Image 1 (cartoon, rainbow, N blue to C red):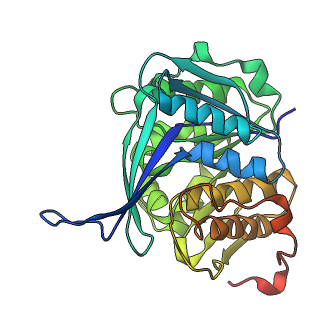
Image 2: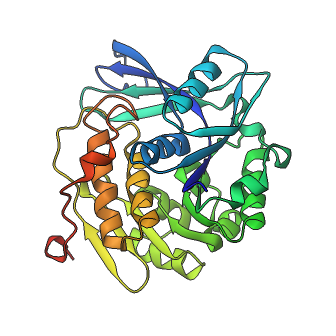
Amino acid sequence: MLDVIGFGALNLDKIIYVDKIPKPDEEGYVRSISYCPGGSAANTIVGLARLGLKTGYIGKVGDDEEGKILLEDLRNEKVDISLVKKCSGRSGVAYIFVDAKGIRTSIVDPGVNDTIGIEDIDFDYVKKSKFLHLTSFISKLSNKSFLTQKKIVEEVPNVEISFDPGQLYAEKGMEELGSIIKRSKVILPSKKEIELLTGCEYKAGSKILLEKGAEIVAVKLGEKGCYVTDGKEEYHIPAENVEVVDTTGAGDAFCAGFLYGLVKNKDIYECGKLGNFVASKCITKSGAREGLPRLSDLRGIKTFSSDIQP
């Protein structure tokens, strides 16, 4: 039995380090370039695998060099890739620009990511997992993969759902995402995403998502940490104080820490602390995965009530 299966875009991150991220009519220069496997759900699944959980992935890659790199990396991370399909076409690529302060922006070529259909899913495989972690697809040229996510949620009623909507799905609105929200054990948006999705500031927005059926909402607040609530308890948990190198993948890393806590039956405060910790490790290194911690790194994390800030 797998602990967590990821289902979202699978991309090769081509990270371009620049002196600054230019505004319109401005110029900058490239300091260096690196290639790193990425994709929101994939980053989270790799984070969970490094923490010792049994993980799998649902996705699609093209018959190109990028696809070979993505598959080989998941194998090396001990992720079950039996449901990652290979087909003709381009694999997903994210062009990520990171400035000298570690701030990032990105442009994504989805490639074959948006072509995953029901025929690509082994429902019996998914039903044997504890959690299904969903993240966004581009869904501009095709909604096929998004519609497949909505269908799979209906077909695996005994599997817990975790949902990291990202800005692209937040833009779809409450009605489009309603069936996923209703089934979600936890929703993990950023502050910007929850405000975009609900039209309210993040605390009021969290209440709306709970009313729509989510059991837990964990809002990623960047350098301010996170806000977590289940409708009965709520906490603001400050971020870890670290030197930032690159914020790429910080939100995905937070999801890995939070989900690890849920799988291990931790309370929502402990899950938030774990999320912050894993995210803090991620941003001290370049790329979305280089800084992801191992299980041994979690020893000594404080999750006691005296650390709680209202």
